Structure formats: structure tokens, C-alpha cells
Image (cartoon, rainbow, N blue to C red):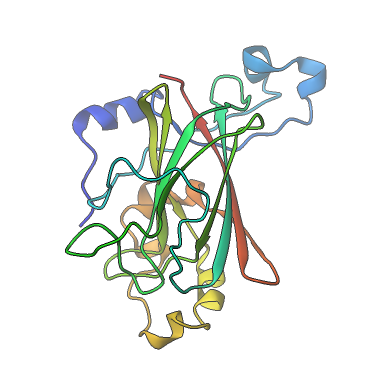
Length: 225
């Protein structure tokens, strides 16, 4: 079971102080100005989603690396995760993006007697706010929709904890391939997932099919402290 948010975390979220994933429109930004002025004018709209629970399988001190598969099988997934300042929508350089997820068979490394550090890693954002990971499409396990966990650290502080989700139709297509097709049908889809219902629809990765697998991207807007 996933750990529920604490009362303090819930209050932070409701107060708009928690970080989240955002969408924005900038078609009028040049005319109205950028940063807080642009946001105030409506030219730039940053919409924060609720924080999503860390879950029980976080392990601190993960390796700084782009490829987190450790050779385990699965459909290749290249992630491009962007971090921006929620107040200005400007990219943040040097943020540490920390992700973890189960492998293609629904197994997490480093917990419940499982060894290794597969499907776990940290990357620093570049000057454009992007962190890149090479991984595989996550598998499923009982009681949860398909997802990836994420933390964003700035200056040693955790400024965002969340989860990324996948469109069910994309997952259905990915799961026709090995080793996903060696398992039975997953028991939970997005709409039935309790975490997804609390904000996951705003944490959906933008997915594209490639010759080798998929790419997934998203922008996270965070407060720096």
C-alpha cells in the first residue's frame, strides 16, 4: 500500500505551497512580459497539481546515472523531465531529479528482499531544466496503475514528490510485447487508481512511439524552497 500524505503535506498542497507538475501557455508572453508579471496578466498560466505520495519503496542515496536499467529486459523508454520555477516558469539548472519504478515484471529493487539498484537513479538538470533517463516501460503490480515515482531536490531540500502516469491505451500497446505479455492482465487502470484520482491526470507523461520503444516527457513546476 502507498503511504498517505501527512496532514502537514496536505495543508501545504492546499495552500499552493507544494510543488507540482504544470502546464502553461505562452502565446501572449512576449507582449505581456515574462515572469511574475506575465503570470499576473494571464499570459503565462502555471497550474500546480497536488503532491502525490512517496510510496513505500523509496531508497535514498541512489546513483547519479542516465541509464538505470542494469540490463534488465523491457521496452526502451527515454525520459525527458523538465524542472521549472513555478513562480516564473523559467528552467532551473542543477536540480537533482530522483526517479524509481518497478521493472517490467513489477519488481522493485532494494526492497522486500530484492537486490540491486535497477530502475533507480538521479540526474541533474541542464541549463534548459532538462534531466534525461534511459529506462524501460514500467511493469505493473497488484493494486496500482502503471507509474514512476519522482523527487526533485534543490540545494539539498526536497521541493517536489510525485508520480508520473501513462495513458492506458499506450500501456496496452506496450504490454503486447515481451516480457509484459508473459503476465496476466493488470488489475488496475488509471481511473481506478486511488493515487491517480488525487491528481494523476495532471501528471500524465506525454508519450511518443519510436523505432525502439517510447519517449516520455513532462514539465514539473517547483518552488525553490
